[in-house]
Length: 256
Ligand SMILES: [Zn+2]
Image (cartoon, rainbow, N blue to C red; front, side, top):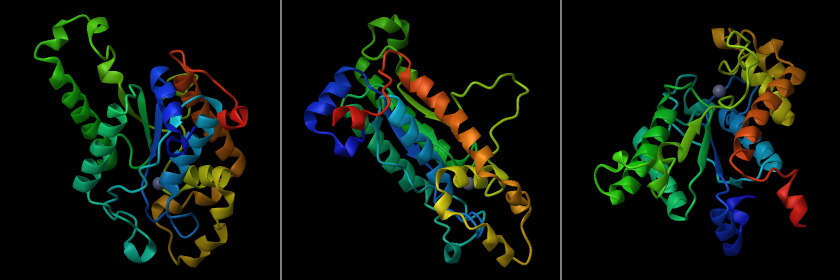
C-alpha cells in the first residue's frame, strides 16, 4: 500500500490498526561505469517494494538523496553530495508529519556508508528529535511511569532506522554477512538481481585503472544477488509482519 495512493479512509484504517510505515533511504552517487547512479537508493527501494508486497505496510515515498562526501566522483559523473543540514531538516519534517498523521511504527531502511555514515546519523537525529517533540508534551519525569501508561509505550522503538539486513537471521555470529562494498561484487550483484536492465558490465573496460573498490565487481552474479536480496527481504517481512500486522501476498491484488 503506497502512501501516496491511499484515500483518507484507508489512511485512517491503517493508523487505527497500527500498520507500520516503511521508508527507503539511500543516495545518488557514482558507482563505477557499470552501475546506475542511484544504486544505494535502488537497493533499499527494491527490498522495501518486495517487503511491502509480502507484508502489510504503508510504503512511504523514498529519501533518494543524502550526503556522499563526493567520495567516489564529482558532479560530472553523477555524484549528488546533498548537504547534511537541509537533508536532516527535511527528514525531521517528514517524520513529524508521519507521526502527526497518527502512525506509531515507522521504519527507515537506509543503505549508504554503514552505521556511522552521515545520512544515517541525520536520520537518527531527525527520529530522536521527533521523539523529543512528542515526549515534551508528556511533562517531566515521564520515564518514571510504567511504559504501558504512556501515550506511546514503545516510544524509543517508534521510529527505527535500520540497514538492509538488520532484521535478517544470520545462522551464527560468524556466518558470512551480506556483502555491500561500494560498487564492487556486493552491490553489483544486488543490482544485477533487482534492476538487471541498468547494469552494463562491459563498461568497466572503459576505466584505464580500476579503483580498489571495483576490483571484485566482475565476480558478481545475479544468482548470488538474488540469494542476498531474499535474505534481506525475509528479515523485513518477519519484522513488519510481527506485532499483529497482517502478512498478505499482495495488498494491491487482494483489493482489486
Ligand atoms: Zn553503494
